[in-house]
Length: 148
Length: 110
Image 1 (tube, chains in turn red, brown):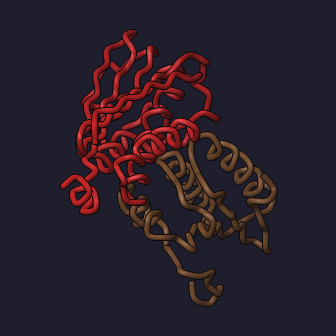
Image 2 (cartoon, helix red, strand yellow):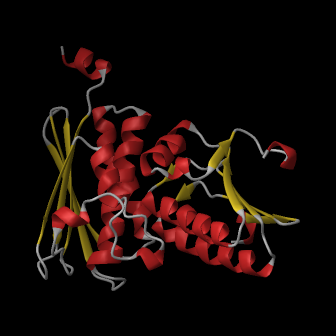
């Protein structure tokens, strides 16, 4: 698979959560992923986009950017916002930690991204927005066969 | 929203949608809580029959209803949970709190 990239920019409205995860899922189909791999990526994208809507922009309508990239068998997904940022990234990534318990938030967003992707990196600072970078290897036997 | 809810006696069955994310979890939560208070519900059944996608917003919504029901002395169960949903529930630890049944159990089995 040659290198391939895409970039999406959309409003931080909750109705775009479904659109965002389906768009990334459609982009990754060229890697011939399993249904489970697609479901993993959709869940991770949904978590990152939801974080941007709820926490970064706190319901205000601004822009979320998703960049996705395929290099060989590696899928990289970057979700960026220019919202309020995270003061303590390490703490925010702890399972069950949430600043919005009253909104029934489980505090599992980053834990799900970590569980369903191969790597997760979060860059953020207060007032500077947040950039979430996730990667996943999509290696299906069939892919290897086709390249030989 | 009505199509997702069915009240039988003191049981509230929530027939969950195909996808559960932050967008619709909030609507489900509002309607479920309205019915819980109005109808003196003792048991909430989350029916995953149609559901193929759920993220942590769905977990938060279920966890919140679990807390409310325990506070009121009631219970919460889940039925028709597919492999993917089981994985999500296990990962979040919610399957330690609520019992999962293959089919809708009879009252005597619970």
